Length: 114
Image (cartoon, rainbow, N blue to C red):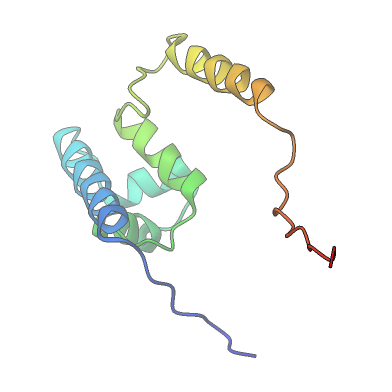
């Protein structure tokens, strides 16, 4: 069994992560924060912050979101300390209630009527 599997990502995903990482770096520098001080506030290592800023796709999404929040980057078009994110959550949960709870693969109907 291979110890690590090389995963491929779409160009869109790679560009989005690169944009987020670059934006995090710019906001950190605007706030005159060092990589180490950001890492300390986020509870991660300095090397992790460097990986995020480079756009590394293997970074933990929760930690990336926390870093983005610390430097002041709004996620999902919602500013911190507003109900906008809660509104998005309620809207999506409402949509989910209308959708089936499980998705099953369609089975082929065998025509055995000769």
